Image 1 (cartoon, each protein chain N blue to C red):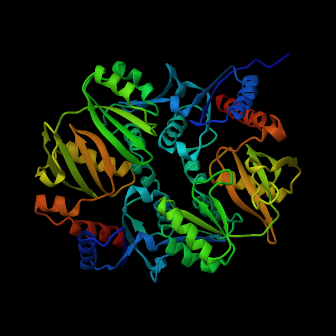
Image 2: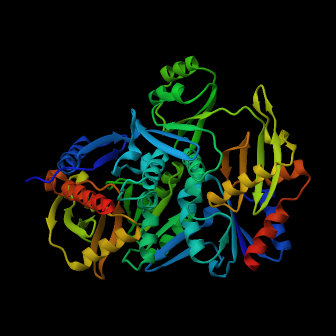
Image 3: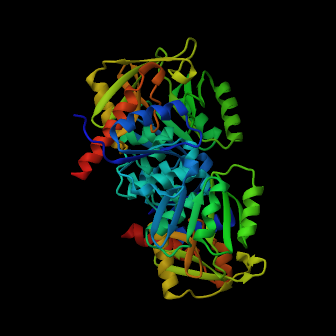
Length: 297
Length: 278
């Protein structure tokens, strides 16, 4: 006999959300939750008065849901931080937090936080001016990876071969008021391991970059497949998620001569449905359901 | 005792602040934020800043605009980890630089704050007449920048705005409009220095034209609490009719000091000294 569905879930998406991804999440959520609602962030109304803050979508009060899964990008921060904060303060279970959103959307800050718990990272810097960056990169040596702080899906990440190229790129970024993070480059094949952290479980996916690309990004023409990975990769991913206060996330690692290192942690990881079907959305929704059930008992 | 002032430009205010710190017994340097870098290797993070050794610092005063939030926040985190006292706590810049977020936090922490509706699309303001009496204050935001601030007199005006605005915003807020003089309060620890900006037909008077006015005990307590809940020991807090409308780490040392005939640099440096000395 099928288990009776109970509990309610709201999924908050970015203003510019990917329909196929949300459809996959909603499909899996509806198998578990009795009520599922999807709301793009730009449709939410935030109302505060006399010490209370409510979130509304049309006339529905979002703080009355049992769980909330917020999938917003770095561009959504102005209202996104508020929505996350208010949902976390409500009785709803939320697998991430405002702090984890702020840190994971900041490539340098992520590395800094992970280094505090002795997780393997590559030497990384952050500076305001091109001059300060150039001085720091001298220590790292070339080539070096230069990243716009909130770039994603491989965008805003450049492999810089020498000081002249660095100066040119930094001057351009500075014109657009972009802060720059520089990271020591480790030559690997264009492959990485994305470890989806799903509560205490890890699903490892090997991503292989498109021919000619040094990055392993699916959105830029790469491929993905589930693999059996070594325990130390899983341990690193779980520890990274815990350090950042996230029950659901994706930790990207590359293999170096010294072992695996964390490249970044993703707040809103794509589920790669083209390659993995609905495997990741299914696991994510199950984590959320289990957590709500645990909370209610 | 060693201290560092981090700013954007070495203005007269920064020079005077540096002197005040020195007068309190600090060995003090000033550095432009553009010269700073943060480097993380292994399990260690280092703050790179010319020849300044952050390991020897006791205190740091930060005076930079909200747009530097992405650099300041990890810097604040590192200063806290190194035990360097700063008048701004980690997370404060994230909150204070995002004005709608700031108002929500103040409200949630029980500070008296104007009723507020925040949305992303102008069409979502349809609920407004049910929730507010007119006039209301409408503000628009693109990223951290406030792009407009308008008093909307009626539902008719609001509808005209809704139909007329075509730009996309990151946030639009509607707040209850409090027609009152503004109390501009400089909080330094538990001390409050206040000036009043009179309300006129053209809006509130410029800060330069404010007058000295002692805030009530309630207003002072509200200002201190507002700064504290947002992680600031030193802050400018604005109140209209007893309600907090803005908290910022930026201190108008010269302007407020001139109006009050007081030196605000000294109490700032004294506050730092008291904290560092324990």
